[in-house]
View 1 (tube, rainbow, N blue to C red):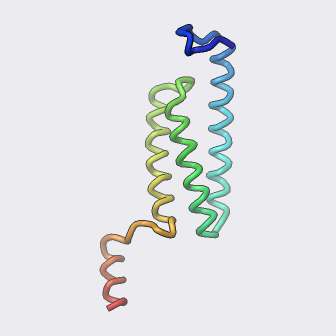
View 2: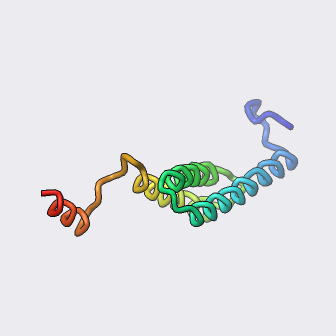
Length: 107
């Protein structure tokens, strides 16, 4: 494989390998999403959501996917990051009506 640091364009074998790796990561991410839906344990869901978000971050930088697909991956990364943050033991505080109810109950 040619080195991209030497200023040469990647050859078709490099592009095929990158495409294969990107597709494999996409399939692995789908599997993680399935696992997320099947587990009820909050700690596991948090870890899965974090990994899914990071996978989407990686996928949105891969040029083997179209710009539209990479934009979708970027949005999905943000979505799963927010989901992980909500599931985090140190997660963000509830907003809106739920937050007001919780304040009423505590005081």
